[in-house]
Length: 88
Length: 298
Image (cartoon, rainbow over all chains, first blue to last red; front, side):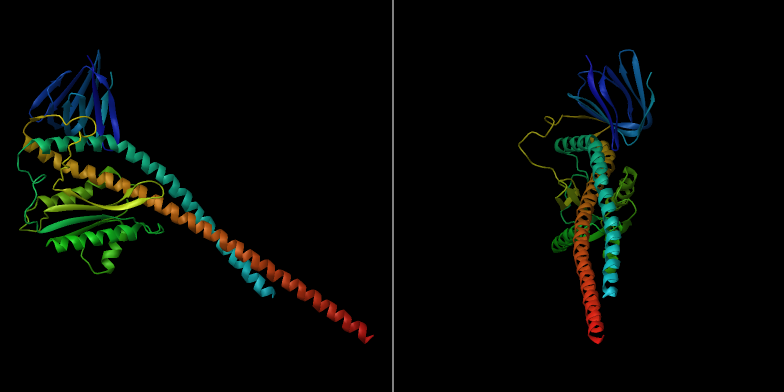
């Protein structure tokens, strides 16, 4: 079951859409988020990557720290600058 | 008589070129409003989300954090006033500076010493002319602020906020800027951004009830990391609103200047025509008078 994912930066919306899984690295370690994950607010590690998986496709976004907010409505990733590095 | 006519023509030409300038400024301001509004719209999802996150964190934790804890005997309060770099924007700067004056009065009456930070050349010159000391001044981006500009200003404010109040630190941060309501209405507003003012409402917040979060690594550390982002985002939103308001105020000011120039040209043209008529009438009467005199002499 897909969930809503939005990667937001103050000056633009980096990416948004439906995805199956989000993998990110918080300051505590890697975390994978699937649909129905408990509500969570995490601090992303600086210089890490957020991977958004949809089917066989993976989208990688380089982030410079920021926040991961998981709620029932979906996942929002708040970053200052986000650069989509690979869209394969 | 001919000299008077020439004088009128000169004035008409001068007003015409002024009109061209004000008209161009009006059009530029109009296109800037559209751009600024678009940037406000783009920045809104991030701002909304961060506000949502921070309100849910603040409302459910009992952690004492400078972000949420009211200082019982606040000594100093930082006031950031957002004005434009250039004038020719009607009452835009005067209004926001007047609002700032009111806030400063209020803070003083509460026994807090205001520390003023200025954005925009107009605020800088206003306070410098009055011999007031500015804790910080930021100029050169009032019409098209970027997030990095907001960050620069926010960094200065946060550094002052986290400092202890025994030293030179501030206990509160207030923000005075101009809210863009629509093209005709812009309102100067003053908000306290730190410590956070939690709205006690019974109505569910927009976008559904606030989630009950788990924190990683801990509520305190999340709040620590959120604090600068929150200030930056609020500041960026205020700068964008102010930029839109500035352009709207300038467009209106320039529109009335253009209209006035049109009126002036009309008046001067009428006066020039009257002067030309007078000159012709006089010339004819002189010729007729001269011809009559010749006819009588012969």
